[in-house]
Amino acid sequence: MLDIQTQLFDAQDVRFGPIDHETHPDIESKWTHDAEFMRLMELKPVRPLSPAMVKKQYETIEKEMEEDKNLFYFTIRAREDERLIGKAVVEWIDWTNGNGFLRIGIGAVEDRRKGYGSQALSMLLRYAFGELNLYRVTAVVPAYNEGALALFQKFGFMEEIRRRKALNRDGEIWDLVSFGLLNAEWREQVNSRG
Image (cartoon, rainbow, N blue to C red; front, side, top):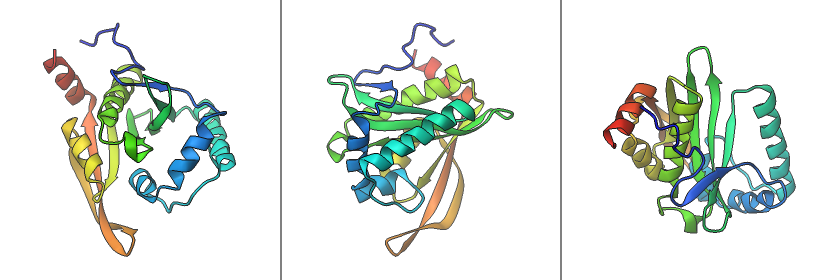
C-alpha cells in the first residue's frame, strides 16, 4: 500500500520542479557543450545549444505537456541551494495501454555519481506508477552508458530488448538496450522496503 503522505517531488538531496525560463537556459546550454552528457542523455545526433535555443526547447516542451498530455518534464534541483542539476522525463505515454518511457540525466560532471540520479529515479517511478497509474515503463539505454545500465538494474528493471549494433558513436557501433519495469514489480519492491 502506498503512503499517501509520501512526498512526490522531494527526496533527501534533490527535488523536482518546473522549468525556470530565466536561469535554466544558461545552465542547460552549458550541459549541451559537454559531449559526454549529451551522448549519455540523447540517442539522436547532438550539438551545442545557445541559451536562446534551450529556451525555445523549453517552450516546445511546455506546449507539448499542455496540449498532448503525454509528456511530464521535471527539472531536478539540489535541495541545499535549489540549483538546477538535471532533468527527469516521462514521455511517449500510451494511455490506452498504460505505457510510458523514462529518461533521466544529471547535467554537470561534478554532480554525477553522488546518488542524485537514484533519488530522482525513485521519485520518477513513484510519479509514473503512483500518480499517473501507468502499467509499465521503459528506459532505452545505449550499451556504453554503464552508469544508466547499473541504475535501471538496481531499480529492478529487466532487459527486454537488445537492438544489436543500433547506435553509431565515434566510429563504434553500440547495442541499444530497452529495459522495462511493471507497476506490480515496483509496488512489490516498495512494499518489501517497508
